[in-house]
Image 1: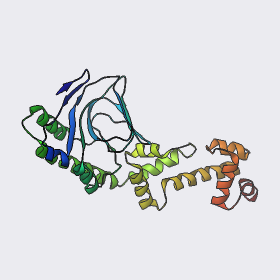
Image 2: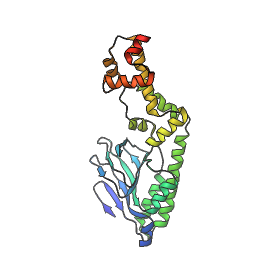
Image 3: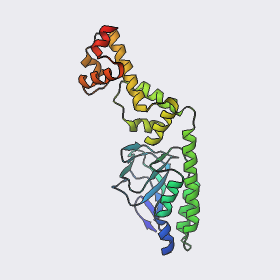
Image 4: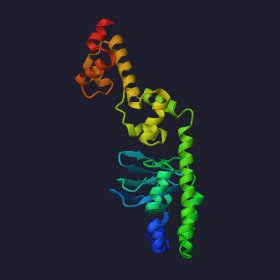
Length: 270
């Protein structure tokens, strides 16, 4: 066991054979600490963390999430990640750090590659089960922990499937894109809004509507531009600025690609 100012950490006794299958680096509880912050570049281990209290921020590659009480985030091997507690309401969380061939097989078998955030997934019983096994320190508990990890991955997969099959998830995306059509929206903002990975977000939207979220978003921007061209005296430059295009020339090119006419031709023709 290792005690730090803001963490209680336990190490699991493992035989060399057990460690070849699944290496359990540590597990523990992080207590509220407004200075808590960790960064890893191309991490050699995976972390499963369940939030018991508080809020914070997790950046994994180019995706940003804001896990709070009752949420889970899964930092996977090989990812660049940076996470930290909110200074006013810092996290209390329970975690396990693992690596190995069995972990890779579980991720692949349950189809969880690059799925990092599980909003509202209750893993309290499973995580405390692992923590207590390590705390008891009664011989090699690898087999028992593997059984618990299998339950965790099963619950993660079921959670993802339920999210994917929620009837209004695609409409929630569509509404968000429609409401932000004049903005300079990034894909990670949409992913965060529906608590799904980028690949899931694109897949669900395309299955329901036949186009990607970006294509729909661009369509809404062009519709806004059409309305401004017909109903205002704004210049093409002002319209491009209002709907967050980088410049009027790029806007004019995209507009012509989508409508077959330049903005000026569209205004005159209508």
